[in-house]
Amino acid sequence: MKLSYYCSAPSCKKLNYIKVKSNNRFDLKNEIGLEINERCEHCGNHTKRHINRLHASPNYYIILGGLGLAIIVTILLWDFGFVSTLSGAIPIAIWMSEEKKASTFNKVLIRD
Image (cartoon, rainbow, N blue to C red):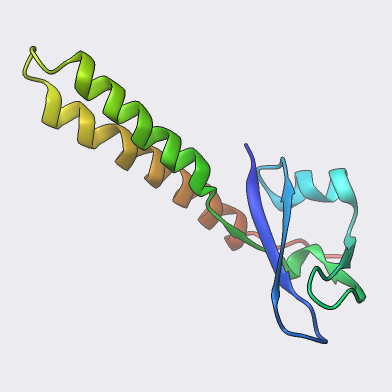
């Protein structure tokens, strides 16, 4: 799973995004350690952030992929009468899954 994480730089207070493949903070700790060395894309300052200061947000590219899949399923199943059920269920299920993964990540913090 690929989630987007963001943290704010203290000098310019703008958001920066980091993409990693981990489901929870424990996997993230094993992947990058307790702190990340971040370089702000806006001002260029280097900052260290603890992984508890990172916030997960859902990956909207996966949700858009689910919407595209729903359009394809709609075209294929147009004659069978299952259009409204499957076309609406696919992107909603993918969106709910991404929101749940981000919420689960944000709820769990690591002790040092």
